[in-house]
Image (cartoon, rainbow, N blue to C red; front, side):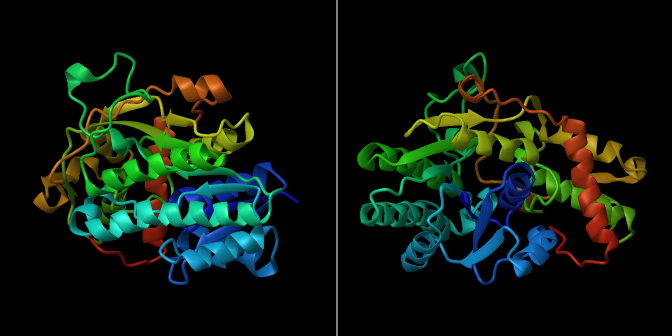
Length: 344
């Protein structure tokens, strides 16, 4: 039986990737999570986990190398999707050391654990995805942006400790491929969103606030940060399909790819789209919250994905409007269940 290992299975992307693999393959899926990981994104999977029906949870931590060695040795996954990270750019400004440790050293610990198991078992040759981020490109001046968008050869200019950590993650993936002959590919996924998106990200906090306003839980004010930043959006369900194709269509060790959607707009446009779906749109006031502004922002995040598309044939399929409507409906459902949230 083919086995896939997903680090960060309880996150938005990890949980959607598990859903995709269960629906489109006959693989067994092993999810790495910490004992304290929140489970709301995988709540729908817990019955299968309890019944050991193709989904298994193993406890490990990127900051504990022995736990990673134990899991890799136990599972011997054919495919590894490394998605776990401290993934919030704004948080990285106040917790830079934790961010760097988790994302850079954590990735190193995971790859080193796999390398050690491969040394013990010469026949073991997993295919590995290391998830970096488009944030590695950071602030690209408009006059330096390639005509067709940011391609793989654009220089790195990270604009946050998170982005710096993802530069390290990106380089580690390529290093282990080149130094040890491991089949590792690295991706720089641009903005991707949809149901289960964390409320620390701009489009998701907008949707959550709108849902809470509709329910009468907060004043009709949406608190925002920088609305002028430009983003290209992909749906998380298209993103996980891309990750599957990355590892199953002629994987090339050491390659690195930009992946992203096809709809580009400002953060402010995204807010207006979400508000369009609400009957409260004419009553909502937009208020800038200084605490939501980053010390430095990555903007002009428009990708050139031609390299990945040429290699795999992947194309985004889910329209931007559906992504945003599904995100808003996700928060409406949680609000209507009576959950209590931080107003962030």
